[in-house]
Amino acid sequence: MTSYQFPQDFWWGTATSSYQIEGAVKEGGRKPSVWDTFSTIPGRILNNDTGAVACNHFHRYQDDVKLMANLGIKHYRFSIAWPRIIPEGRGTVNEAGVDFYKRLVDCLQEHGITPHATLFHWDSPQLLEDLYGSWQSRQMAIDYADYVTAVVSRLGDRITHWMTLNEISCFTHYSYGVDSDPIHAPGTRVNSLKEIWQTSHHALLAHGLGCQAIRAVSPVPCSVSLVDNFSVTVPINESPDHIEAAQNAFHSYGQNGGIIFPALTGAYSPILLEQLGENAPDIQEGDLDIIHQPLDSFGFNVYSGKYVRAAENKLGYEILYFPEGYPKMYMPWLYIVPDAIYWGIRHLSETLGRSDLPVIITENGCATPDELNAKGEVIDTDRILYLRYYLQSAHRSITEGYPLKGYFLWSFLDNFEWAYGYDRRFGIVYVDYSNQKRIPKASFDWYRECIRQNRVV
Ligand code: FCB
Image (cartoon, rainbow, N blue to C red; front, top):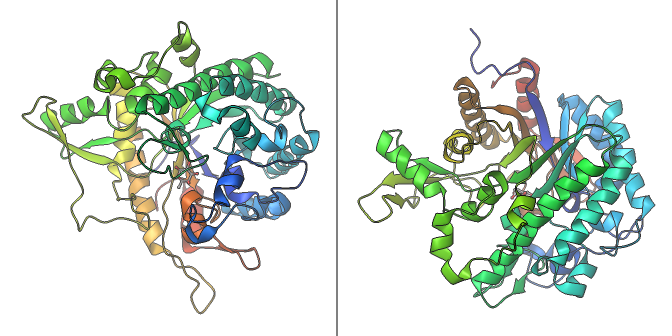
């Protein structure tokens, strides 16, 4: 028997996002996003990089899609830039911006690749920041839903897999801060933790209203998901007491209790609300019904996890810190915890009780200090090692009957890695930014072979 074989209909794909690869920030009627503004503030981004040119995918998408076809993927996740579609955030639709995505999607389909579109991957219109402070205002959810209506009514004939928002905590809890400068755009200081939780509450409302908008205007049946990078608690070993500890910790670790809990169960975790006390967000009547929309799948972005063990304290568990020598990839937070895939999926089923919801891994990958060798190749065996372990864990979840349906590797190309600029490369294709040359890495060949054999090789 061949080992680590995946089901015949498993989706193999790769993922990217608009601001990280498109460039052409002033072309085709696009206006600035909060990331254009934020990245030009000296010192906010490593080496003061910006996404102004990025991988110039806006102009090079045809060659990029050819390379994807060469890789053998049948699924591609990308994001649509709100400031290309509605440059001022609200009001007039820029048809030239819509046309870019029509061209991209047509090209994907000509190559037999199914498009999966994320409607928001952090690049919100700067003008809404100027007008009312972006996610600090409830109005943002309403304007987002109008933007979604504009997109889906124009592209819904070509795209049937929609994802509302990418990683709510990253554009709320990491974009607004009380005691320190937030690392993500718009990078606003606020007065209390409550104000931060209010921004993620507004984002949840945007998700809910966005789901309703997609279903209302899509001309054909379509699938709708939310993409989140919830925090994965992993038992230090799989004894019943440590498993129970990991399940208990899951409720309030990171932002879990205030993001995936309301989105997938219709209620904030009571444990989190108790911990937050007066810092809990204001929740208006009917909000939770809007937020708790029926979904067709859940998009799980997973890079790392946190070990937990049972403890004789009030909580009954203890979150464990990584020892000095614990292996990690080329990011301060990227500890190698392959079991995070398996445990994340199991928590969705068991801890949240959503075993009915198909799961797609919408991002998994790592940064490595890639360099071209004398032959002009990138031999990233470090990335292959990381990916192989994580895919084995994904396979375990399928073997045990959890509903995992697909895997999108982050990322297809090296790209603008937010606060780390171009310094941290996550691609399986190397980008030489001096001439925009694409050089497939050893991991590209490895992933192609996995896809070809439909198993972890
Ligand atoms: C995720 C983001 C993605 C990329 C990876 C490394 O949090 O969704 O854009 O930056 O991390």
